[in-house]
Amino acid sequence: MTPASSPYDDGTIAEIISAHAHLEGPLLPMLHALQESFGVIPEAAHAPLCKALTITRAELKGVISFYHDFREKPAGKHVLKICRAEACQSMGGTALAERLLEKLGLDWHGTTPDGKVTVEPVYCLGLCACAPAAMLDDKLIARADEARVEKALAATKTGGSA
Image 1 (cartoon, rainbow, N blue to C red):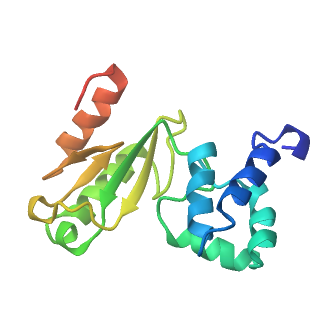
Image 2 (image 1 turned 60 degrees about the vertical axis):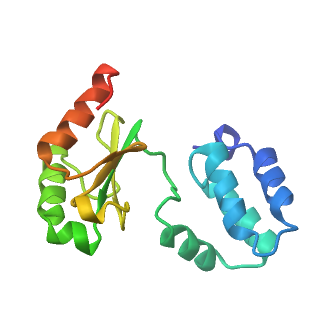
Image 3 (image 1 turned 120 degrees about the vertical axis):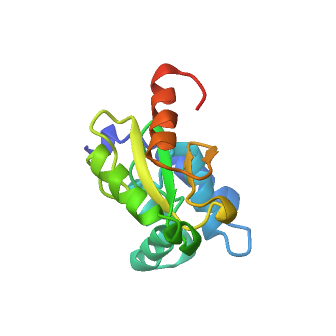
């Protein structure tokens, strides 16, 4: 895309940065606000953030990549998070994740070609006693197995609840 056709409004980016600049430790609030406004942390915001906070692009990239909820590219319409923490791994979560990724034809952070589903790792959903766990959008799936996850995914296609 050329800068003129960027879907990210420079004025909105500047407003978000300015609105949070007075805070102590403003970077995370700025990133959350950008994500809320655009659904991603747009590349167009990197230079203004670095300038406003006198940080390097490498420092900014390190923060964005450290926190799993920040995105630099749009997610699919639905986000499937699969727990990768120890309790879920010990209850078959790794094998479950591998099978689901294979069925969807994706790697971690991948989105299906139709843009409907993005699969992301998460490192604890708080359902350790009901492991393995997954979450589709904001709906938790305890004792997750292929059938439960596929039923939840199918419900997104029909508009029903999982």
